[in-house]
Length: 361
Ligand SMILES: NC(=O)c1ccc[n+]([C@@H]2O[C@H](COP(=O)([O-])OP(=O)(O)OC[C@H]3O[C@@H](n4cnc5c(N)ncnc54)[C@H](O)[C@@H]3O)[C@@H](O)[C@H]2O)c1
Image (cartoon, rainbow, N blue to C red; front, side):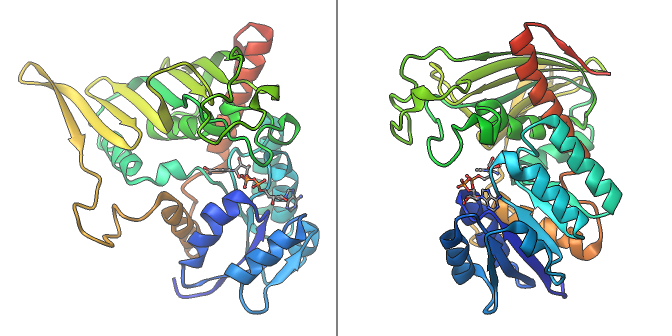
């Protein structure tokens, strides 16, 4: 990593400040040279905190895209804007990291894939759960065939009372939906990645909005959450073309005593199974005619700054992304894969509205 990569940030809100800018800031050969937000103060503050001395501030992303020195753009706006900004950025010759979900609709996500293909620029999506050490170890077990054929999976993003009631999360027009598009998107991405299966055959789903006061007990407080039109929970059955089945469960608010955080899944294979729940990775199989469970230690074992287990997923994501630009390799999250996630999530909403399964060609 010996050359400088100049990055422009579009959208300087929560995820920019919580994930992207602090991570990019730790990579020595990244320079954040431009910041754009429709709320100018946010871009100014970001430029002061993370930018180069001569970093530019914009309120119109199209102006930022005119800067030819910028090689990479991070699109960190609400979901509705992802597609237009990403497509414009790709056609302006930039490589793009766009936040999850890929887009508000599958049609928008498809436009993004087509733009990446047409321009030959790299496009990736911020599914950082793939970069967790536990997820990478799980992937290793899949790749060395410890599990055999994975034909049965569960995919979880289940919160008891965790409705994000700030910013635009409750705005259907901006975001496109509730927990399905917000957090199940992470779990489904991880599940498909570990299964290495991107060929859905049918999706049957049902969304729920039943609680009288979903804001009661919310970990982020009561902010009038019950006025949102969005789903509080959903359950879906996904069948893949090879016959594998996935049960997806998701909620922002649900009367369950056993929440399981996003980025969790269970994979059952013909030789062994694997559970990755709340970062705890457990293998199960039969040995000496007895069921055996093995918990994988993915901690740093007390070693400070050990760069395997102590690197955060968001830092690993940023490092891998910048490396793929420098080395001209594929990003960890391919746009075609993220598109399938968007198509399945949209099918859950469609199936819930029509009461019928959605079939894929
Ligand atoms: N990877 C994760 O785990 C994770 C977590 C939280 C949010 N996200 C995603 O990040 C995205 C942003 O969410 P957030 O929580 O940061 O929201 P936010 O509202 O805090 O920040 C979005 C920012 O974008 C700005 N903006 C809106 N339209 C713009 C435009 N056209 N040009 C420039 N700036 C514009 C807003 O003013 C705001 O400052 C969403 O897509 C969300 O799903 C991902």
